Image 1 (tube, rainbow, N blue to C red):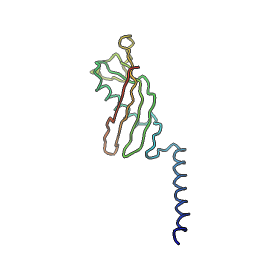
Image 2 (image 1 turned 135 degrees about the horizontal axis):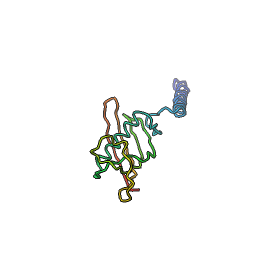
Image 3 (image 1 turned 90 degrees about the vertical axis):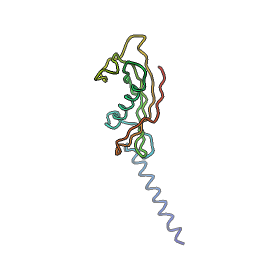
Image 4 (image 1 turned 180 degrees about the vertical axis):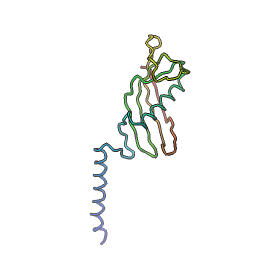
Length: 142
């Protein structure tokens, strides 16, 4: 007969967990497993975005450096580390990849070199192990 006495306790526990989950979503704290908007001013988000930009330029066969014209979306997901998802519009600059200080390079306005690309990235980081990797990315001409 102990089972009926445990049922209200179990229901109360489930209710408390559900209310805690709702409160964390409303307060803006990340819920494990959920995908949420990421703050581009956050240092960890910026580090992941910089990594995506660097990998994009390494893989590019272009001699010119490209940099984001616009970050369309940034999201993160807490898992056994952190997944970051970015949608970025890239444009070519007037700088070659060998030049220093590439972040301030002006965009190339010459009509034949004015190409833009839209890319979606997934970056996985395990900060406590100092590991970061590109899970996937896809780009298309705009």
